[in-house]
Image (tube, rainbow, N blue to C red; front, side, top):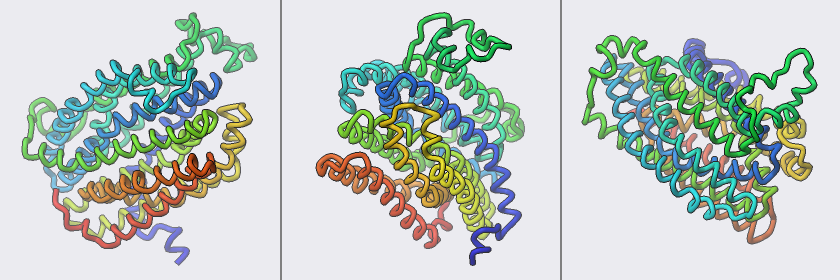
Length: 474
C-alpha cells in the first residue's frame, strides 16, 4: 500500500502530467520568488508598510479573482476541444474569454483607481497604514485589466498544452517587476544601503538603477513596478499567439470570430467559479480585517506568512492545471479511465512538491522569516504560524488537485459552493469569535484555517470518488 502511494502507478500518465506541469511550476515559482522579493523589499519599510501592501494587494486580488472563472472556462473548453480535434473552437474559447474579461475588468480598473480611498478604510483604519494601503490599491487597480487578459491567455495556452510559454512570459515579467520595484521603492541611494551594494567593490551594481536617482516612492513604487510588469506580461503573451499551430491552421486569430453558443456555455462555466474566487478573495480580506482588529503586528505577520505560503501552493497549482487539461482532453476523446488516472498521478506529484515545502517550513521556519523581516515580534508570531502551515501542505495538496480536477471535467459549481460555504459559514465567523470576542488572538484564526482545509479536502475527496463528474458534457 505504501509503495502504491509513493511510486507512480501509470508511468506514461505520470510523465504526461509532469511534462505539462513542469513549465507552469517553474513559472509559478518564479512568480512566487519575485513576490517574496517584493515582500522582503517592503518589509524593510516597517510593519505598517507590510500590512498596507498585504491589505491593498488582497483587495486588488479580490477584484481580479472573478476572472479566474473565465480563465477556467477557457482552459476547460479548449482542452476538451483539443481532445475532440476541433481546433477552431479552441480559438473561439479564447476570443470569448477576451470579451468576458474585458467587459468585467475595464470598468473595475477604473472604479478601483477612482474610489480606492473609499474602499480601503472599510477594511483597515490606522493612521499610518490606511493612506499607504489606499495608494497601493489605487495604482494596483489599473493593472486589473491587463492581468485579466493575461489570465485568459494562461487558460488558452494551458488548454492547448503549450505550457512552456508560461515559463518564458512569467520569468521575464517577474524579473522586470523585481528590477523596477527595487529602484522605485528605494531610489538609487537608499537601494545601495538596503541591498548592501556598497560592500561589493568590483562593480557598482547601483548603476543598474541609473534612472532611479530620486527619493524612493515606498509602497507606491512597488505598485507602479508591478503595474508595468503586468502590462509587459499581457503583451508578451500576445506575441506568441500567431505562432501556435491551432491559430495558423485556422488562418489566424482575427479570422475566427465569435461563437455565441459557446459564449453562453463559458458564462455558465465562468460564473460559479468566478463568484467563488471573488467570495474567497473578499473572505481573505475579511480574514485580514480580523487580524487588523487583533493588531497591526498580527496583520503584518499574516501578510508575510500567506506570501511565503505561495511558495508551496503555486507550484501545486501548476500540477492542478496540468491535471485539469488532461482530464478535459481525455474526456473529450472518451478515455475516462485515463482521466481518473490523471487525477491520481497529479495528486502524487502535488504531494511530492507541497510535502517537501512543508518540511522546509517546519524545520527552517525562523531562518525563512528572518530573510524578510528583522522585527522580533513578527518573527516570534511567525515561527508558530509557519510551522502550522508546513503541516497543512499535505492537506492543501489534496484540495488544489481535486478542486482543479473537477473544474477540468466541467464541474465548476460544486467546488465553488464547497469552498465559499466553508470560508463564509465556518472559517470567518469562528476566526472572529475565537480571535476577537474570546480574545485568544493570533493563533485562533490560523487553527480555524487549518480545520477549514481538512474539511474541504474531505468533501472534495468524497465528490471525486463518487464519479458523477465523468458524465459532464461541455
